[in-house]
Length: 524
Ligand SMILES: Nc1ncnc2c1ncn2[C@@H]1O[C@H](COP(=O)(O)OP(=O)(O)OP(=O)(O)O)[C@@H](O)[C@H]1O
Ligand SMILES: [Mg+2]
Image: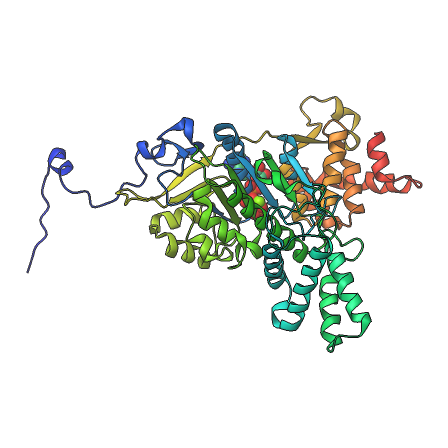
């Protein structure tokens, strides 16, 4: 029988032995290689070493960001893009599903394109492609978003009608330059022209399967009806400048549903991919363009979407894709297995943890840490091109932010007694950080335009609003009293004050005559 014997051993002889545990963090020369050519994220949790992100020694420059709602994904992306613009002069194109980036992009001096609110994309714009190639892409998009793939005859009819529309507009089918004999650039047809061509054919009665024609028309018409023709009017943005316009936010929150949002996102990715190929390869420090897909699960999960193409070819062109999601299994495997860096914010579901641990191969210690992270804290996994003799997953204490905080104030003046008003020890306002308030309002079910209205009312009144008016406004937005109560409690208002607020609110509503609460807030 063998025996275990305890022995004294000197530090020197211990140090000469082979290390059997990997160091928990990469060494400083990896974390901090070239600060003037990389992006600062925050300090590591164990040794407090500043971590600067660079992709030169990684398999590719793409990033995946995962974590539960409110864990800090979007905040991280904003910080990251701000610094990338400073360090590398990088451009960014954000596909903003929920209108989360709009305000920030505006305040950072970027450009916001709000589809559904005055901006349009013509689906048949060729964006530097030949019409033949563009038709293939449009058909692929329709296959992702509609059931056209199940109806080969309707697919053929649609394809032919698009071709006819291009020809009618004098386009040459295999040329990327489209000019008339006088040298003027030709104007692309729209889906409305395509519908017209199909309808004409239907009316002529010459086609032997009218039901097929009718269905093909019906499918396209969902994109051409007045008020829903966001993709069937001439584009209001310059596609040639998409990848070089600094910070651009494509706000999709004004579109009526997920199909429209996906159609916009898929088309923009196609145009971006073509630009990427057209501008060609150039050896240059840093990333030229970051394409951000935040919560765009329909796109990120689709094998045939151009996001996969950007991921495959991005490194060659210095383009980087950032995908963020609450659910890592929503990100297509072709993308997930091709990201060089994964930032993991708090994750709770076992299923997601299993998936992450299975694909990134981190220790149970890291897994435990991930379940307990606070807002802004994360684990980082990097895929190095050479084998690393240190742990490629490590913890970041907190993402150190770049975002200016804006505080909003709710005035308690009307719910305090005369005495309390004069008492310097009694708080006269409750304050809340703007993004935090927006987040909460979203959580309580307000829609984006209501949240926007609240923000703009605060902004117009020097960041202040009377708390009674605020409560009436919430009522007007359809929030039930118990919800308003818990919202006010969340903001730190005490129970007696809340009762007082409702008494005053009822009184005010009675005496409002026919004035709108918005006018009252603005006059106050
Ligand atoms: N590193 C950080 N430092 C300070 N505040 C942070 C940090 N990260 C996030 N926050 C704050 O926490 C809140 C939630 O963050 P954020 O909006 O980034 O969450 P998210 O993961 O994108 O959530 P969702 O999935 O719902 O979009 C915001 O108010 C943000 O300002
Ligand atoms: Mg977010």
